[in-house]
Image (cartoon, rainbow, N blue to C red; front, top):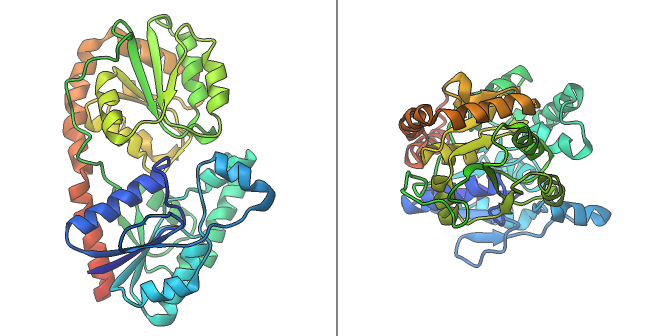
Length: 376
């Protein structure tokens, strides 16, 4: 098939959307599809079409700190690409995606959409991520100007599909995981030099408000084993300096750095425990990557996080925003290595359903159904 991907956000792999979109593109190409990509990314390869980014004026520095560039709509490029497509997949309901949707409707070109941006990911920038009225308004806005026209919506989890239903969305929802890259498998990796005698806890996420890394630092400070624990944060983001400053109060300050996926896989396999502390997660590929390597997680049970459903036992979950509860769960895991070993086996088996090959099968089915007008 000739598949065109319209991505308002695509650049450095420093956020979940970019990572999952890049994997989708690469895996569709591997299967022989003719894939074209319209995005703000400057990629000098066949099939990539670069558009300008939106000028946010006095807010440009703030946007840059968040490591995200938003595309400006270029209707000339969009018409060219869409006109040579069997199906168009539109990832986000912003300027470029909205323009692409309108052109698909005008030209009667089959298209699908995805839901990758939770309202909480936007409202957190003004401190209103827990304001239900504000988040409902964002859901409503997304629907009225974009998703009401979408015949298909790719939902990475049933959690977000249900949120859309609760907010009045009516489409053919295709619940398909974004999938885990094949590189993330169990490996026999020693602990990093200098940390051989420490209990290593890993968090992989952008360092920003809704990821709540501060709760992990507070929990470690409350742990009976705080002198033994070493926290690794694999990521970057606007709150990096704040988290570094908080971490200086720990007996073992956190090690914070961004890692390419091969390095990240080795780091995951060298650690003892994974903590997903996020308030808002549509899926949490980071958590799936960890459990695919057999790293046992403790996950915040936030009402706005799909990741909480990856908790296989009560010991894999803690009360969101309660560092004391997280500390007690960390202590339990330190004191029961036998339980961690058994859970490791269970998580490796459980994670097989999220392998990207299986997910690409389902994405191909959605694209084929869109071309043929098949709905569930």
